[in-house]
Image 1 (cartoon, rainbow, N blue to C red):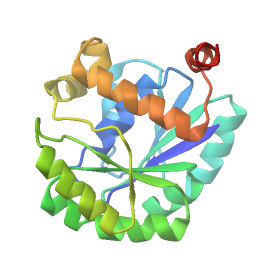
Image 2: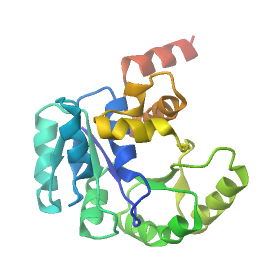
Image 3: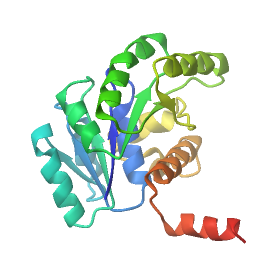
Length: 218
């Protein structure tokens, strides 16, 4: 079982939104562990009325055991949502992860908070990437400036940008993902790109990826 942790020092960056959409898009047996006392992912799951993905609230003390149980039960992927702070929950999640995703809006107030997150993931020594989320449409200069700031604090940047899309807002109160309410929409396409990139980082093979490699190799 591979593990992805979503970490951000600042609240309001869309961390839980990215977590639930990634968990649904994975298309595998996914466990989403919610370490945030606000239990945003758990409340989303309550409205969802579905057993997939499995969503469970945990404290950081129970995370290690929950990951062992998840692996033993045959889950393919664990997604860990953390509180909006670079505290013990976030550090525990980072240490347990194979990959850390740092959602960040491309605004100065959000970028100012990313320095502490950078310190946390560096101390955990886990591969970590910033994913720009809720980026305004056509904000090329804004994104270029944001990338420069992120690189300046020593963090890598994922190649996928999630834009500000109404589908994310519309899906949340229904316990759905953006792809489930608008499968052909742009939000669904961006999440699919993120999911494919995450799988590549984690070296998770799906039948689709195997077919792509066979085709590429002739």
